[in-house]
Amino acid sequence: RQTDFTTAGRRLQSDTRLQAWFAKVRTDADAMLGTAPKAPPNNFDNSREVKRRVYSLALVYRLTGDSRYAARAAQELLAVSAYPDWNPSHFLEVGEMANAVAIGYDWLYDYLTAAQRTTIRQAIETKALQPALAIYNQQTSFYTQSHNWNLVCNAVALGALAIGDESPDLADQTLRKSIASIQNGITE
Image (cartoon, rainbow, N blue to C red; front, top):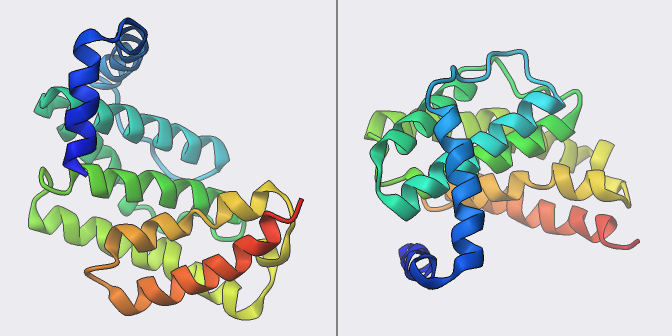
């Protein structure tokens, strides 16, 4: 919600600990401005790096309003949206990438053009939610695991939340099955 970023921005003006933390995030985001988006193929390190980049860039944009950060984050989102897939054979990568892309889609929604939103939404649908539904329906892979892989893989639920108003049926199916699967991941 915009009010959350507004509140954080106000706190940033007077909270010295928050200022120190934000300075580190902004320094990191500044260094990313001159880098190229991560190229495929996707692997766990790649997914984690994309998540770090999108979170940092989009957050700095939301707290400063400086569109350079939004533009660079959008490049990252569009690049990973063009990947052939997010490596569903090792679903941790899909979970991490869905996490990154969902947050970026949400935090940059008003910045993105309609065409960019369509591209990113379709990537969430075809590279995260549809592959997740295949696993949910078979109750295999991460679905039944009782450790943190379950929770990381079920981050596809963030993708469902991000596009829920645009793809309600797919989002609803994914969320319902994710909730059932997460019960296995929180047992230990």
